[in-house]
Image 1 (cartoon, rainbow, N blue to C red):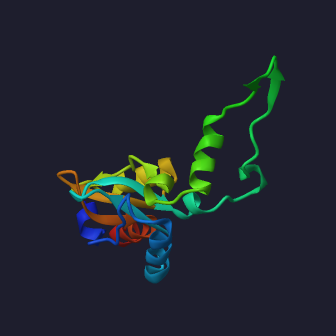
Image 2: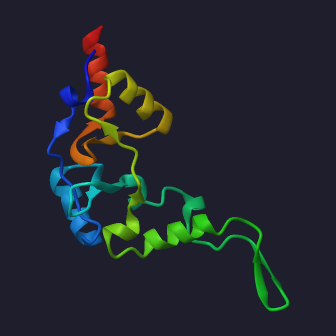
Amino acid sequence: MKTVAEIMQRDPVTVSPDDSVETLLRVLRSHELPGVPVVNGGGRPVGIVTEADLVMVDEEEDLRLPLHIDLFGAQIFLGPVKRFEERFKKAIAATVQDMMTEDPITVDADTSVQEAAKLIAERRHNRLPVVEHGRLVGVVTRLDVLEALVSEE
């Protein structure tokens, strides 16, 4: 049974939480990547930035305040404000930390390809950071996993 270590892309391109959004975009463009892990100074993944973090995909993703009523001078929101706050933070992001999805789902290098495939399908992710002892050592993508599963048959 193959492990993630056998199929992962080693030494992945990364960014730091303190990098500017401009630097992030330059990295994604120059390496033609749809996403990139965010690592701290110790090489540990602290976030991930994907195209979904960069783009508001439809009209419902705009920055309109949630429905609210004014009652005696106070605004009472009728819907969740948290999602608006998250989208607003990303829209005005100056650094990768402002934009990244924190605490990314990771897999250990010795995880089986089947387990990685299950995780990718359940979580609907296209790429997973791969760690050994908590440090980033690679990235495995949906395509890597599919190719490995097909070659096993």
